Length: 513
Image 1 (tube, rainbow, N blue to C red):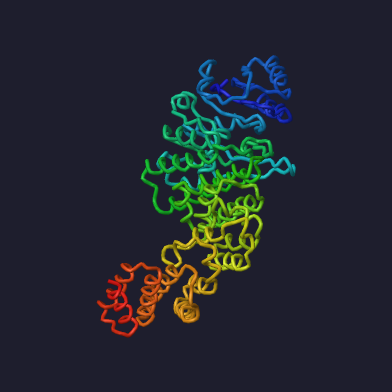
Image 2: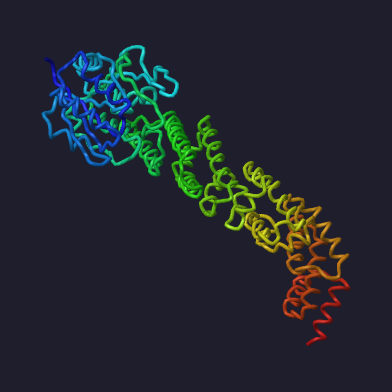
């Protein structure tokens, strides 16, 4: 008879595939097995199929749950007469007829703790079968060797299915089964930590069905948590064997990027609100592990940015967004120079103006700021949006215009502001000097003169600096701010300045006393 195998299948509403799955077990060339079938609250007629098979074959043990729920195999298996080995078959997949016979012989012959076969994926939408993973020759490894070659082999034992293991070892393995996705990879790594010898056959005996209703292709809000957990489990396993060198670190970054890509693709197609999508994008973008993975120069990184932008700009153009904080968090990664323009008061503007979205997407700060200045001069959207506040949010500390949120100031001095935004300080200083000569009264003259003085200092233009200081002192005097005027005059005296304008100011201040 040979050694007994415990087979486990849990089914939830997979009626179109269930008969093929069960038949592939019952027609195995190796017959010494018990088959645990779990009816996980099926509502589509799968329950009757399982009941009929259980009634016809005493090797089948049928369990029925009234609702679809997650349950640990380690809680179920001890309730039955357990075999020597354990294997899993998903309810929408199937085996080759010699799956058990070949894998058990492979395991016994090579004294293995884990035997793995290759996989053939079946694309149901196209009715195509193709090899998903398969080795050219059988490979036997110690646990340390497996860790060393992990990047080349990890996809084989990344699932519980398509493998046979020792049941007693499996039951003694602490499993992190709480995650919604990728739990197989984590469980297998936990099991492999108990293994002395691991074998991967050069066969492909497991048929993996891909169809849209598969759990792996459904969005789950906890899926990113699983992405992180997979990364950490792999990292810990490699560190355990002191093999987490630079090449493996780079490889794992790419693995994590690929995992995030799959999560983002499902999020993109999910039937949830745009705000929910942006909140999840923000959570992904802000995670420290994301920043680590994005240091990898690979195609997955480019794809990550492209897909994140696709999700975000679709949401932004929809005009339904309200979560500006999450959107800003995402743009800190996607468009770090321009992200300051993304505010609660600017979401509608970006939804209306495609040119602004294009500049934001390209992270073209110069173009974006110029477009907003242009809207200000045209007085477009002046009643709907505070364009000065939007500029205030995106102007960095290093620019002399930092701290200004007054839309009128930007409109009055639009040409000067554009020169400053372009960091063309010399031309800006020259134009502002002309304005000081031309105008008797300036809008917000004190702010204007402080910016003028900053530019003169940055350009090391001493005459302009002195001229600006004199104009500031005169402004203070006109506004009867004599102490502030006196402070400016004293500063010029200390600089060694001696001219008629300064003398006149000094005399006026002294005469007032």
